[in-house]
Image (cartoon, rainbow, N blue to C red):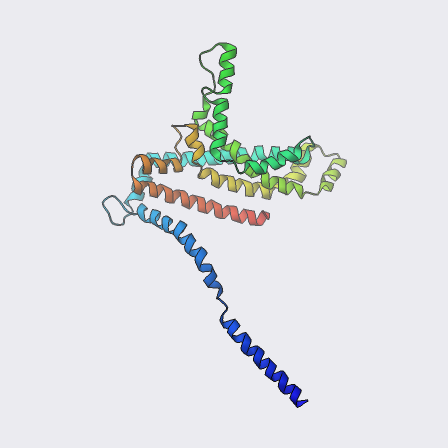
Length: 297
């Protein structure tokens, strides 16, 4: 009995001794976090720090708030900020309305190829924005299909469609491109909707409009809020659509950064506008994350 007990104690001591070096060789968790943090700092935080620092550096050197005062006082900045905000809000509103209607049709109206259309929505999200703008130029451009059909039918020298180079053309292109970003969360929300509620409402005499307003819309509000918040953030930072439409009279904040940095070589002003754009985007993205978390998206 004593020998057995002694053997057990010896085995436990050996096991503890063998486990001790293993524990001592365990790498702390923070060590594994160093490589991704270092990559993130070099690829993003360091350039961002340089942009912020440059925004406080006037041409004569030193650190000053003069670049911010000059930019905020300029009419070009105020016009660009106003244009950016109203284009983003208008595009978001258009995407919400169009996305809700299209998602309703795909989810609740049976038609051949409905599942293929729903899958195409996912594929559409991977398209670059300039591709949509290029397609609209082929259709509504000065020498596009619509103007060509008009001149061929009427014999006129020019067609009536020239809105793509105006703010309305930018608005149409952004609504066309960003609507699927609203449809995706809506289709996911509609797939989880209990169809029994729709059947009960229909059996009680509710029409389609009443069913949509009283049953479907309340369930879709979180998804609409999440999709709308995301679209608003992306519209505020959209550059390719404005550039490819050739709308010379439309200057947004990203276009103003490009103009100040590339065309005017005014890097301090470009960095000031970039910092303002980043601040607005981060604020709206934080709102998007809160809405998405509440919506379960």
